[in-house]
Image (cartoon, rainbow over all chains, first blue to last red; front, side, top):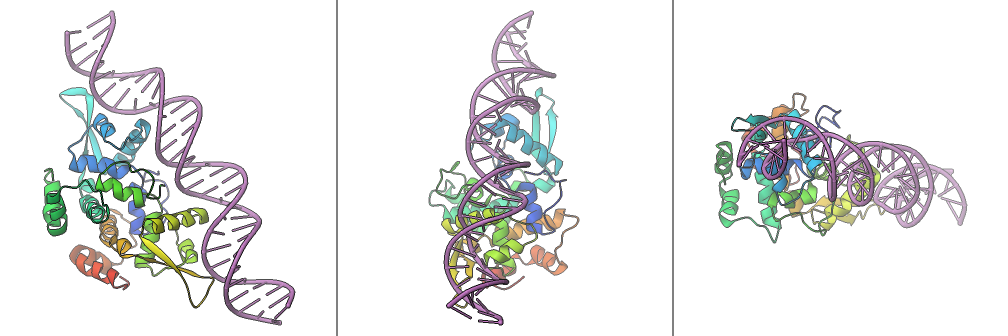
Length: 137
Length: 137
DNA sequence: GGTAAATACTTGTATAATGCAAGCATTGCT
DNA sequence: AGCAATGCTTGCATTATACAAGTATTTACC
């Protein structure tokens, strides 16, 4: 996967987006930050999908280079590094939520709670607002 | 990239979506079908990003297996095979459009016409309706 | 009817991305 | 000082993608 900076494939906005997060892992890190309250390397690693350590390190670097996340030392524990979404990263909420809506519609075995399904159908703006405020959905 | 059918990484709806089109090329084929009126192998190949022939063939197979597109012979020209989006594929319009909106906001050199930018900000439902009706946006 | 062009692929091989196991560096705890 | 926690890096195997070429079927032309 290319970090932004390498030559872009075209001027298309879909391509621009895919060049940044169109791979198997980037959006799962964003998901962990956006919906699951995760903020450290170790927490991302624990996510059920099993990302490899080197791939995670690379994705974090790319996401930071592209300005979707930023990192900072934890003042309480200097071993820990805290990652969080920038505004640019938070603005991916509609993309993620629409993906979730699509999957909920077509995945027979979706693990999505009914209340969230309802919100995805009837209150997308409310969900986006919650994400921006850092609330869990 | 896995066609659906291989084991899924998790039950998460984001993962479900990424397992189907979370790669460098799948959504560009969907884009060509959805926004550019393309419908043949040759037309997809001509898109500026330069997908390799074997990768295109594989992506078309996967998208068809997953029920996002379907193909049919052209009665007028038996050499041609026509691909088009199913309802399941058309339902990706909100995902694509939100990606475009995000890119338009953050890509300094987006090739997106002003009228479309306005619609992305102010009339997403209208755009989705147009896509469903097969109109160009 | 024979030949060439058009269309949709497949095949073979090189390069790049990902997966996996292990190891290293820094900080914190005792 | 020693050990655990945390966040990585490194080396190598496997998989995906890129690139160049070739094949199969249908159509158009002479």
